[in-house]
Length: 335
Image 1: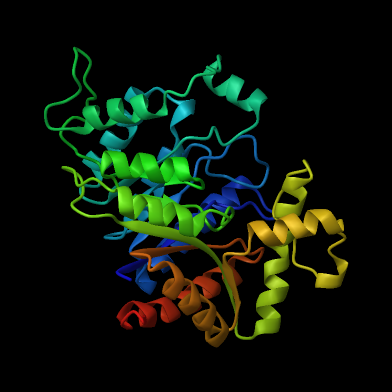
Image 2: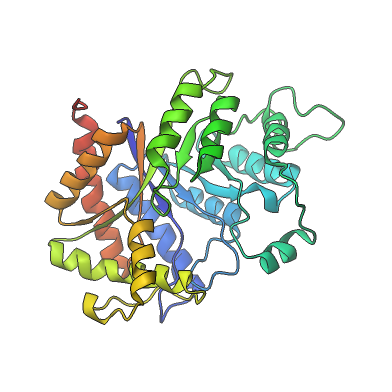
């Protein structure tokens, strides 16, 4: 494993505001840089009361301005919501302001409900234009610029690194076809992880962007001094995900005892399956769990994520994770 990185959704805890969440994101990014994280990604979500990163490019710019050398990017931008030219201009501007530090991960899903998608785009097309949109976007970033009279300014010649994100086999096939790096969203949709990674690696076609396949795997992490404390802190994300699955999204709940979550059994089963690619516990426990995942999937990079109600506990969680991950990066892969 070459690197470890961090995905932040800018969670808004109960009792706090979006302004608090965005301030916490900057503080966490600065801490992550000092911890040795390689990249720091933010994700596009809309109409979500508990997530403050909807205007993703703006948040990325704020984080990049507050850090010095860590790569900052989108994990990701939901391309169906946008014209490729707009994204090329936004990320071309970011790459111009922060040279050699900006990543652009692209998702195929809208990342929202249909009403929100309608509000974003004014019209929703039934056909899948994602491959063509990716091609167009790559053209805007290239040295030659896009084929046609329209150019992205800033954007042309910035060659912003583009990633394909996914939680199914489609994204793996597309990333392999384009010869782009691939990030799998196993932190919330782990079912097809091993199959998708296998397809991506076996089908990968070297390109001007990448000579060989590069895989990032998302994993949830909640670390604390003890297993019991970490389990307690993790209850916030479990409850938040359960409410989302029940059609009642809200701010990130305060943690509570596992016996008082009041989640229907069938919903809890879905939550546990969706969040099964995770490591919760003390440093010793998460080292064991992450070692098992690395041995099974051999990722080039792990991207950890996790929502904890208390900001300082969240920073501490990623600090513990960074110490474990630094050791795992230095450790030869066991076969």
